[in-house]
Every structure is written in C-alpha cells, then in structure tokens.
Amino acid sequence: MSQRQVLQVFEQYQRARTQFVQAVAELSSRPQNIGTLRDAGVITLLRPLLLDVVPTIQQTAALALGRLAYFNDDLAEAVVTGDILPSLVCSLSEKNRFYKKAAAFVLRAVGKHSPELAQEIVECGALEALVFCLEDFDPGVKEGAAWALGYIARHNSELSQAVVDAGAVPLLVLCIQEPEIALKRIAASTLSDISKHSPELAQTVVDAGAIAFLAQMILNRDAKLKCQVLSALSQIAKHSVDLAELVVEAEIFPVVLTCLKDSDEYVKKNGATLIREIAKHSPELSQFIVNAGGVAAVIDCIGSCKGTVRLPGIMMLGYVAAHSENLSMAVIVSKGIPPLCTCLLEEDEDHIKAAAAWALGQIGRHTPEHARAVAETDVLATLLTLYMDIRSSEDLRLKSKTALKNILQKCTYLPVLESLLYEAPPNIMKYIVGQFSKVLPHDTKARCLFVKTGGLKKLQEIEAEPGSVLQEYINTINSCYPEEVVRYYSPGYSDMLLERVENYQPVL
Image (spheres, helix red, strand yellow):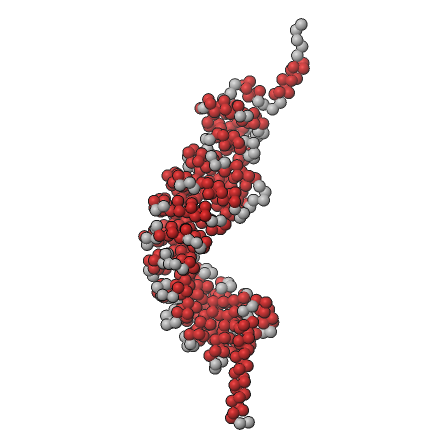
C-alpha cells in the first residue's frame, strides 16, 4: 500500500468520525431521538472521541454529550459512571476556547439534575477548573463556567459553599462588570444562586462588593439582565435586617419602582419580590418604602397584571400592613384593599387567593377603623365562601378563616356583621355574635335596628351549645332587650300564641 493510499485511509477515517459526531450532535438536539441514542450506547461511543487528535471532533463530541446529559438524569448519570468527567476537567485548563465552552456545557448539563450529580462534579475537581475559566480571555468561556457554577450552587448550601471556597465569588463580581450582556446575566444569576441559601453565603457575596454593581444595573435596558439583578438583590435582602439595609443603602429606591411598570412580566415580578423581601423585616424598612412611594407603585402593579406576577406584590402589602396600625392605614389610604379583593374574585390559583386573604387579614386586624375599611368592600362574604367551599385548598381555607377571625374580632360595622349571621358556621359565628355583644349594650339605635332588620330573630334561631362562648354572647345580647321581645322573636313563639288563641274561651 502506497503512502498516498495510507493517507486516504486516514482521511476517510477522520471524515467518518467527523460525520458520526456531527450526526449524533444533531440528533441529540431533538427529544424524540434521545431514547434511540441511549439504547444504541452512544455515550460509550462518544467517550474516546473526547480525546481525538482532531479538535473539532473533540468539541462536537463534548457538545453531543452535553445535549444528551441535559435531557434527563439517567443520561447524566451515564456520563458520570462512564468516567467521562475527569477527562473533561483536565481539558478545561488545556484545550482551546471552543472545547472549554463545550466541556463547561457538559458539566452544567450533568450538575443541573440533582445534588448528587452536582456533588460528583465537585469531587472530580471541576470547581477549580471552572473558576480558572472565569479568568479566561474569551467571554463565552467565562459565561459557560459561570453557568455551570450556578447550576451546582443552586442545589443546597453545602454545594454553594464549595463554589465559594473555590474562589468563584470575586471573579463573578468581576464578570458582572464586563461589557457583554450575556455574561452579566449568567454571573448575576450565579450570585443569586449562591446567596439564596443562607445569611453567611449572602454575606460572602456582599463582602465581594456585589451589591453596588448589581444596583447600578437595575435600569439596564436588557429585561433578562434586570430579572437576574433583581433576583440576586432579593436573595441577599431576604435573610436579615442588616442585609436588607445594605441593599437599601445602595440607593435602589426609587429606581427599583420603575421595574414595576416594565413591559416584561418577569421584571415586574422580580421587582415586587425585591421590595417584599425588604419590607418584611422591620417597620422602619416598610416605612422607608412607603415614603418612597413603594406601596402605591406595588398597588398599581397588582392592578395591571394577573396570575403569579401579582403574588409578591400581594405579600408585600401584607407584610407592610402587619407591622403597625400606621403602616396598615398607609395601605388603606393608598387604596390597596380593592385590588386584593379583585384577586380573591378573579384569580384561579388557590395559592394566590390565599395570599390575598392573608394580606387582607393583616390590614384589618389592628383597630375597628381598619376592620371597617376592609368590611365595607363586602370581602368578608367572599372570605366566608372560600372558607366553606370544599373545593378550596387547605391553605386557602386556613388563610380565609384566619383573616375572617382577625377582621371580625375588631369589626364594629354592624351592617356587614349582620349579613354574615345567615351563612356563617358556628366556629365563625362566635366572632360575629361576639362583636354584637360588645356594641349593642351601649348603642340604643343599633339595638333598634338589630330588631327591625331581623337580626334578633336570626339570633334566636342559632343553636349554640349550653355553656359555650357563643351561648354567652347570645345571652348578653338578649339581656339588652325586654324579655317579652326576646320571647316574641324566639322560634315557636307564634305557634304558642296561636295555640293560646285556639284554647281561649271568651267570656260571653
């Protein structure tokens, strides 16, 4: 065989390998092909091609493996058991930028599925190699490494701590300062994934100076970047008052309020989430948000969107109102009650309705004035219906019951209370009747109106257990009226009178 023929054989072999990896990479991009490829043992066939002498074959083989591993955890597990990770890790510090990006993609695809698979990546020494890639000249390599680190860190605090211990945080903070938008997005996302697990991890991100750079990007035109920035700040602020104050000190107000009017729904949601995470910690932080116009902005946001986008705003109003009477009144004055009532009526998801019920309970629980502001919207009947509806989730029923209890115990607005007398079950009825027992002894007009509207008659029809709290309340109310009036409205009294008429013998 001549030298030319030998070269032709090698060329044919190279073309065959190239065609094979390209075909597998293309097939693995379509979900319907994954099962067939797996059954054909394609992962075992791709493994030696990662060490091929031709760089393009190596890169394409890594890309194919990444796509396969990304599809489900079984294939990701096959990559791990196939002893492929060590060769990928070694190549991260030696190969060209194209291979580095493909290798980082494989690590991300494996690590995303479970903490156990992410731990396998940590144990093969990948974190140090990925952190090294964060210093690479090519932005795409940095992006791929940051993405892989984020997928590892998001699972739990131990894996997140491992990422921190590898020295990733300072380099990620540098990445968010790079001009490339895609790199900024992924670095902010990874900082968010690290911060979310514990105050200590969030403090590590803060100590690296991340807050100032994240705050500067709130007004960036890129919606996806804004989402990640707002998420990262939320994950930092949620842990403690001190961390929330550090976020506020970065002068995010009133700038962050513009996010609540953004055309992107996820920007709205993440913006409201950030405000919620700050407001929940203390009355002082909530007051700061009120003074900055945050409550009014959140109320407008709730009214302009639907579904889960509303949820953080609803909870934010509840947290603000829960802190004090004055803050609750600020929500009322800003007309925060009607949108919450709308959520109870319009939303299909029970967890959103439950949040709205909870928020209304926080607003109305402080004083009779607060309770009346809620009661005048007729939302108590809605809460009662949701509580009694067997189709409601357990959480929704519990939140509705608690809200009713909180509001009713302060409510002295009798027209609304009386309307509930005809529907409420005994465990709610005692709070309604209890409020009547507090008001009627001291209000002559209310006592007369209670008779005229049929309230006293309905009261006599309530079947309360002897000696119960409800019975004591009924007795207190009955003692406000002459005995013959109470008897007149008692069940069976008309029959007794009729019987007396029938038995009466006139004197002729």
